[in-house]
Length: 351
Image (cartoon, rainbow, N blue to C red; front, side, top):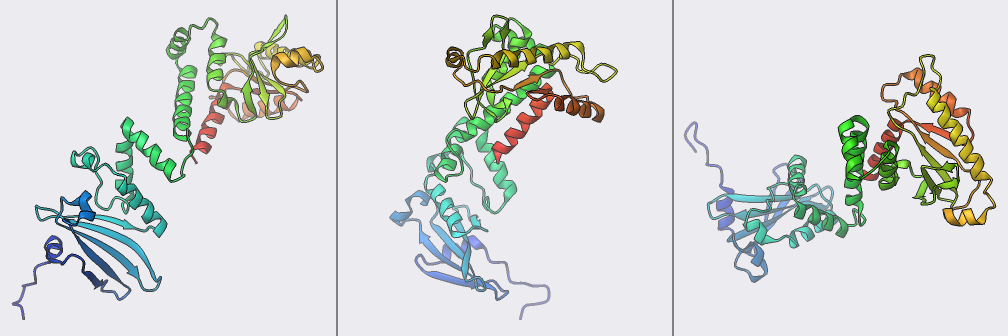
């Protein structure tokens, strides 16, 4: 019997591991009667364990639950030379998940581990916060980014180009917002790309980022001329192979008068769109023009992108709804509508 206040010293896990015999199976109750820890020890001198021979003893522990009749986790423990114990948990994973993690470990560069270029924290898989920190650290390095893409492709989590596409779309949205909100950024883009007119800045931007125009269109066409007086901004082909038109005006244009009617420049733009539709339909059987366009002509629709709506109230949005409902083949959007749609597309791509 121990004197009052005395307790047995807490067992040192590293010492326990050092004293275990390699090749033996050890079994320990949880203490609650619900399951057992089942472990075995490998000797670091074993030729099958070359990759981790820096530790003289390595324990692999399986956690078995009686009620479920299954293994629910694996723990790897290494007794370090300084007496400490390094532990890696593989828990809350099914067997498929565990095998994938083991596959990942088998492809790690242990020379990088030795040089501290990659650190796997104990309990990383079990700790979402630590896992997130680790992945963010790897993602900041170009080599790490490539390795992450390679691993995800091997597990079938992504298709070729998915990560690049997401990054490129995110960058495009950031540029979109800069062009809209900063005169300096707009001028910089215009100068860098040797662009003459301000409207051509937006032609260039949307040509480079055609996905922003929406999923209805599969291709921006090269042929912009309808006739000598009608030159479209962005003719596009839809999924059925028919031509439609994107007409661009500047985001700096006012949209409504104080009386809540379209400003004169918006009215002129709508009349221009109507003329484009009429002239395009006249060429419905013009096979030369169809060949030049690379798309069939039948009931073309025009999307007019004009002005901004970032400061609109409900009454402005309602008025635009009424305005659009009065047209059969013309749809009017602001640049902010297009921006919000692009953000939505990007969110859907991430998932």
